[in-house]
Image (cartoon, rainbow, N blue to C red):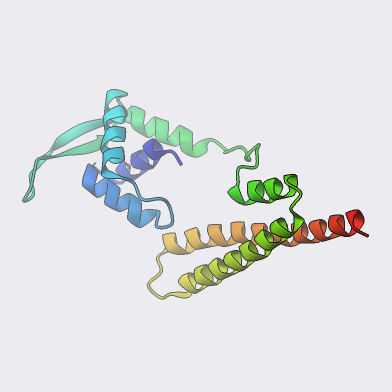
Length: 178
Protein backbone atom coordinates (compact mmCIF):
# COMPACT_ATOMS: atom_id res chain seq x y z
CA UNK A 1 0.00 0.00 0.00
CA UNK A 2 1.25 3.47 -0.80
CA UNK A 3 0.47 5.61 2.24
CA UNK A 4 1.36 8.75 0.28
CA UNK A 5 -1.18 8.00 -2.43
CA UNK A 6 -3.88 7.01 0.04
CA UNK A 7 -3.44 10.35 1.85
CA UNK A 8 -3.52 12.20 -1.49
CA UNK A 9 -6.76 10.37 -2.31
CA UNK A 10 -8.29 11.32 1.03
CA UNK A 11 -7.27 14.95 0.48
CA UNK A 12 -8.92 14.91 -2.96
CA UNK A 13 -12.25 15.20 -1.13
CA UNK A 14 -11.13 18.38 0.64
CA UNK A 15 -8.66 19.82 3.11
CA UNK A 16 -8.00 17.92 6.34
CA UNK A 17 -5.55 17.80 9.19
CA UNK A 18 -3.50 14.74 10.14
CA UNK A 19 -5.88 13.45 12.80
CA UNK A 20 -8.79 13.52 10.32
CA UNK A 21 -6.67 11.79 7.67
CA UNK A 22 -5.74 8.98 10.06
CA UNK A 23 -9.37 8.51 11.12
CA UNK A 24 -10.60 8.61 7.50
CA UNK A 25 -7.96 6.04 6.48
CA UNK A 26 -8.97 3.66 9.26
CA UNK A 27 -12.68 4.08 8.42
CA UNK A 28 -12.32 3.83 4.62
CA UNK A 29 -9.83 0.94 4.68
CA UNK A 30 -11.23 -1.05 7.61
CA UNK A 31 -9.33 -4.26 6.89
CA UNK A 32 -6.00 -2.53 6.23
CA UNK A 33 -3.37 -2.11 8.89
CA UNK A 34 -4.24 1.07 10.82
CA UNK A 35 -1.91 4.00 10.27
CA UNK A 36 0.11 5.36 13.18
CA UNK A 37 -0.20 9.10 13.77
CA UNK A 38 3.57 9.41 13.35
CA UNK A 39 3.35 7.78 9.93
CA UNK A 40 0.61 10.19 8.86
CA UNK A 41 2.56 13.28 9.91
CA UNK A 42 5.87 12.02 8.48
CA UNK A 43 4.13 11.27 5.17
CA UNK A 44 2.43 14.68 5.14
CA UNK A 45 5.84 16.28 5.72
CA UNK A 46 7.29 14.48 2.68
CA UNK A 47 4.24 15.32 0.56
CA UNK A 48 4.54 18.98 1.54
CA UNK A 49 8.30 18.99 0.85
CA UNK A 50 7.61 17.52 -2.61
CA UNK A 51 4.90 20.10 -3.36
CA UNK A 52 2.07 17.54 -3.51
CA UNK A 53 0.19 19.06 -0.55
CA UNK A 54 0.26 22.50 0.99
CA UNK A 55 -0.62 23.85 4.40
CA UNK A 56 -4.08 25.40 4.07
CA UNK A 57 -4.42 26.88 7.53
CA UNK A 58 -4.31 26.31 11.25
CA UNK A 59 -7.12 25.00 13.40
CA UNK A 60 -7.28 25.01 17.19
CA UNK A 61 -10.32 22.97 18.23
CA UNK A 62 -9.98 22.51 22.00
CA UNK A 63 -6.39 21.39 21.73
CA UNK A 64 -3.06 22.08 20.08
CA UNK A 65 -2.75 23.84 16.76
CA UNK A 66 -3.54 21.56 13.87
CA UNK A 67 -2.30 22.24 10.38
CA UNK A 68 -4.86 21.63 7.68
CA UNK A 69 -3.46 20.28 4.41
CA UNK A 70 -4.82 20.62 0.88
CA UNK A 71 -4.02 18.76 -2.30
CA UNK A 72 -2.03 20.82 -4.83
CA UNK A 73 -2.29 20.55 -8.62
CA UNK A 74 0.94 18.48 -8.77
CA UNK A 75 -0.52 16.32 -5.99
CA UNK A 76 -3.69 15.73 -7.98
CA UNK A 77 -1.57 14.86 -11.05
CA UNK A 78 0.50 12.38 -8.99
CA UNK A 79 -2.69 10.81 -7.63
CA UNK A 80 -4.21 10.56 -11.12
CA UNK A 81 -1.02 8.95 -12.46
CA UNK A 82 -0.97 6.42 -9.60
CA UNK A 83 -4.65 5.56 -10.08
CA UNK A 84 -4.18 5.02 -13.82
CA UNK A 85 -1.11 2.77 -13.45
CA UNK A 86 -1.94 -0.94 -13.63
CA UNK A 87 -0.34 -2.96 -10.83
CA UNK A 88 1.75 -5.83 -12.17
CA UNK A 89 0.93 -9.24 -10.73
CA UNK A 90 3.31 -10.15 -7.95
CA UNK A 91 6.35 -11.86 -9.51
CA UNK A 92 7.26 -13.81 -6.37
CA UNK A 93 5.40 -15.86 -3.85
CA UNK A 94 5.69 -13.91 -0.62
CA UNK A 95 3.59 -15.86 1.79
CA UNK A 96 4.45 -17.27 5.19
CA UNK A 97 1.96 -20.03 4.46
CA UNK A 98 3.88 -21.14 1.37
CA UNK A 99 7.26 -20.77 3.08
CA UNK A 100 6.28 -22.92 6.08
CA UNK A 101 5.07 -25.77 3.87
CA UNK A 102 8.21 -25.70 1.71
CA UNK A 103 10.50 -25.59 4.75
CA UNK A 104 8.64 -28.48 6.40
CA UNK A 105 9.10 -30.50 3.22
CA UNK A 106 12.78 -29.50 2.97
CA UNK A 107 13.45 -31.00 6.37
CA UNK A 108 11.66 -34.13 5.10
CA UNK A 109 8.94 -33.87 7.69
CA UNK A 110 5.89 -34.86 5.67
CA UNK A 111 3.79 -35.38 8.79
CA UNK A 112 4.59 -31.88 10.03
CA UNK A 113 3.77 -30.39 6.62
CA UNK A 114 0.51 -32.33 6.46
CA UNK A 115 -0.46 -31.32 10.02
CA UNK A 116 0.32 -27.70 9.26
CA UNK A 117 -1.69 -27.77 6.04
CA UNK A 118 -4.71 -29.28 7.83
CA UNK A 119 -4.53 -26.79 10.71
CA UNK A 120 -4.11 -23.88 8.30
CA UNK A 121 -7.07 -25.06 6.25
CA UNK A 122 -9.17 -24.96 9.43
CA UNK A 123 -8.00 -21.43 10.26
CA UNK A 124 -8.72 -20.24 6.71
CA UNK A 125 -12.18 -21.80 6.77
CA UNK A 126 -12.98 -20.12 10.10
CA UNK A 127 -11.85 -16.73 8.77
CA UNK A 128 -13.91 -17.27 5.64
CA UNK A 129 -17.02 -17.79 7.78
CA UNK A 130 -16.25 -14.62 9.81
CA UNK A 131 -15.89 -12.51 6.67
CA UNK A 132 -19.05 -13.93 5.12
CA UNK A 133 -20.97 -13.02 8.28
CA UNK A 134 -19.41 -9.54 8.31
CA UNK A 135 -20.67 -8.92 4.77
CA UNK A 136 -24.21 -9.80 5.86
CA UNK A 137 -24.10 -7.33 8.76
CA UNK A 138 -26.67 -4.56 8.10
CA UNK A 139 -24.19 -2.01 9.48
CA UNK A 140 -21.51 -3.02 6.93
CA UNK A 141 -20.39 -0.17 4.69
CA UNK A 142 -19.48 -0.53 1.04
CA UNK A 143 -15.80 -0.38 2.08
CA UNK A 144 -16.42 -3.21 4.57
CA UNK A 145 -18.06 -5.38 1.91
CA UNK A 146 -15.38 -4.69 -0.70
CA UNK A 147 -12.61 -5.45 1.83
CA UNK A 148 -14.37 -8.67 2.85
CA UNK A 149 -14.80 -9.71 -0.80
CA UNK A 150 -11.08 -9.12 -1.42
CA UNK A 151 -10.09 -11.18 1.63
CA UNK A 152 -12.62 -13.94 0.82
CA UNK A 153 -11.27 -14.34 -2.71
CA UNK A 154 -7.71 -14.60 -1.40
CA UNK A 155 -8.72 -17.06 1.29
CA UNK A 156 -10.56 -19.12 -1.32
CA UNK A 157 -7.44 -19.23 -3.50
CA UNK A 158 -5.36 -20.26 -0.47
CA UNK A 159 -7.88 -23.00 0.37
CA UNK A 160 -7.68 -24.37 -3.19
CA UNK A 161 -3.88 -24.33 -2.91
CA UNK A 162 -4.00 -26.01 0.52
CA UNK A 163 -6.27 -28.76 -0.84
CA UNK A 164 -4.06 -29.35 -3.90
CA UNK A 165 -0.89 -29.33 -1.80
CA UNK A 166 -2.33 -31.84 0.68
CA UNK A 167 -3.11 -34.11 -2.28
CA UNK A 168 0.41 -33.67 -3.71
CA UNK A 169 2.06 -34.36 -0.35
CA UNK A 170 -0.05 -37.51 0.07
CA UNK A 171 0.82 -38.68 -3.47
CA UNK A 172 4.52 -37.99 -2.91
CA UNK A 173 4.47 -39.82 0.41
CA UNK A 174 2.84 -42.86 -1.23
CA UNK A 175 5.49 -42.88 -3.99
CA UNK A 176 8.40 -42.59 -1.56
CA UNK A 177 6.94 -45.08 0.97
CA UNK A 178 5.04 -47.68 -1.09
